[in-house]
Structures are given as C-alpha cells and as structure tokens.
Length: 153
Image 1 (spheres, rainbow, N blue to C red):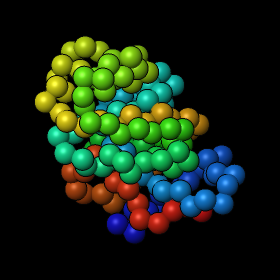
Image 2: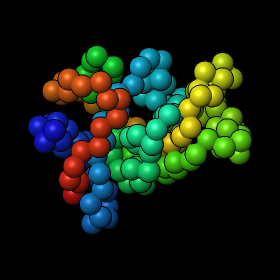
Image 3: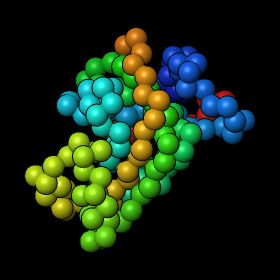
C-alpha cells in the first residue's frame, strides 16, 4: 500500500497543501459516474458513503485531509480537501440530515430508498476540488475507499 501512498503524494497539487503543520491523511476514493463528474464540475459538494458496517471512511476522515478521486476501473483524475466530515448511525434524525443535503450529495429519494438497509453514513464536505492530469495507481482490490498510512506533511 506504500506504493499507492507514494504515487499519490508525488501527484499532490501544490495548491492543496495545508498552511498548518498538522500531518493530515490522504485518502483514495473510488467513484462511479455520474458522481465523479458532479464533484469535478462542482455540482456535488458532499460525498456520502453508506454502509452496513462501520467501514471506511466511517470516523476516519477529518477536516484538512486530502482525497484523491479515482474513476472506477480507471485513473485518478482529481483531488480535493475535506472541509468537514461527520459519521452517523442512520437513525430517523440522520435520514432527515441526508434528505436535507440531498441536493449537495446529488441524490434523490429513489437513491435514499435504496440505502434503507444501511446502518451507517459518512458525509464529507469537499472544497478546493482540483482536476489533475490522470494517472494510474496500482490498486487491484475492490475497496471503494482507502486511507493511506502516513500523512502528506
């Protein structure tokens, strides 16, 4: 996994480096269309990850972290900074929160209904979305989210 971390760190756009001395984490998010394009074009400003279990990125993403955006079965094509993240158990109140931000997540009621069997959600507010020259990473597993060990500081 260090190979992926090193290749991502080498491609980190200098515009996304933080001003603080805090060591933030790097993440690789695998995205399907149309969500990837919505993020890159600024229509989708909140990424959501629903799960039956507390799997990545549940409680593992914080403000200032960098997320590399990888096309499913394709290249890394963008990067962004986490502005704010919240992980919640999907209680009736949490579903109200999801519905309140549905336009920012680019989801509709049909999608929400398809997620009703899930128990957890992470909502990640994105900022400074940057398109980058596409490059491959040597990722061969089926994980849709990978947190890189070590920061980028």
